Image (cartoon, rainbow, N blue to C red; front, side):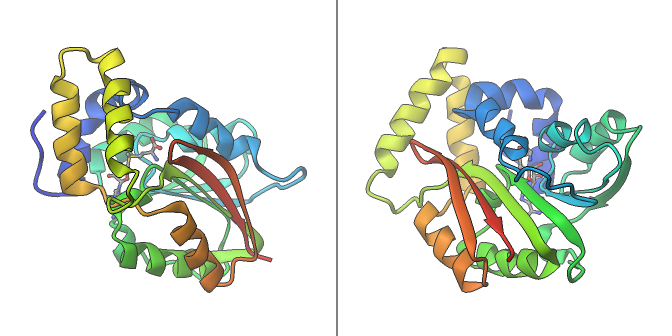
Length: 228
Ligand SMILES: C[S@@+](CC[C@H](N)C(=O)[O-])C[C@H]1O[C@@H](n2cnc3c(N)ncnc32)[C@H](O)[C@@H]1O
């Protein structure tokens, strides 16, 4: 697969065999996806859920059985990904939003839950900080923001080690090395991960008070931030 010019085209192409590729390319993918539902507070019952960078809907899929009556907003720059979601979530109340995060008009105090699975690492530091502010404002009181992603800056001294371990992981499923060659190029072009501690401090800056890191394995992480 060749690298495309922009994120929408890149993920239109990536959508073809998306889940299998993610499982083979992203350490802890299934585990980190399962933490969205597992780490909801007992009794928390969201009416409106926003999935930022929904891809083919793997994060939303973990919620629909538990919250079949909720309204879901699935946002993604890739139209092909949204088409996959449309087929997948026919029987639920879903709004499909083909947009970049930066262009989305977040309504104030609208969503009870906002989730982001492996999507915010595509945003620059400034974009993340801006998004965290909009996410906070868009949550209802006691609303929750949850995120699973790679959380290490490319300037972190551990970054070369992370890449070495990552390459070894990818080689287990794709031993001919072609997938890693593509992934490396994709990572250089489209991925801008930031350190977990930096992200926590930006969440605090925008007034999130309760922030829990539920998983932090070799820089693959899941956190939950509550607006309270
Ligand atoms: C690695 S996939 C993750 C998809 C899904 N959340 C999951 O966990 O499997 C990242 C998704 O985020 C979308 N995306 C990345 N940057 C975006 C942006 N700035 N605005 C909107 N969507 C974006 C991509 O199109 C892609 O579908």
